[in-house]
Length: 322
Image (cartoon, rainbow, N blue to C red; front, side):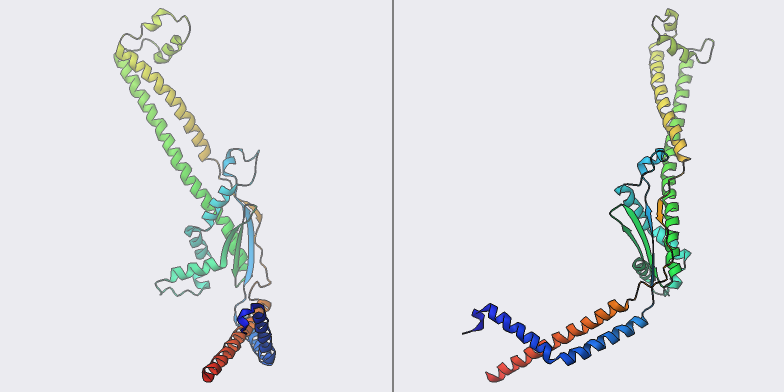
């Protein structure tokens, strides 16, 4: 009866056959394993040593700038995401490449048309940014020089603050200029209204006659002569418009003064938890890891080869028997 009717029996026979194959070729597997380890050791010696260094920062809370002294808490997820965007920006990357002459470090052939893309790929492999579950940002570098790795990380920590301040200053400057222009435009509008009002009825006495008129009419039991100042519909409309525009001016002035205060406030720097220090124990290559990979790769290749060879011989034997 065919073994296909008894899958458990077939599986057992296949397992026995597989282990038998390994046992019969145990010497070959041992030799191949040693060759795999030897190859891994040789490759490890040829690979350049690399040294890992890292620093940890927290983004500041962008919503607490006005009360940072009273409530200096760390940033939220949005602040961490914004910091990650700055760290991964092309502008910051170019600054680090220029500062440490990474074109020379990576021995980049600038005659190639795609040398910049190659350089960026190498930079991304060696310099990494990771956001932890605590919303901190881990900045790491893995280069052939332990001091270079630490210096790159610390330089990034410094430069990202400068880039952050530049971005905020640019945005604050635009907002300040907008509010300043709005305030100055409103002043001109009031001056124009004042000119129109006094062209219809010249002031009698103090130059702040309009203000005095508002002051008097706002009181209860204002004297009748106060109302005699407005003697035409056009003048009445202008007075109302002036009063409305004056209220707008006060609002715009408050916004302008606040913007002037904020633009002169320093942008809060990121909280630096750990600065990078040179680590003189290499991070790669690893003898243990490479030897393990070499050993198991050699075994897997050999076992697959032996298994396929066995199946091929069985198939040829069936063809000849048929």
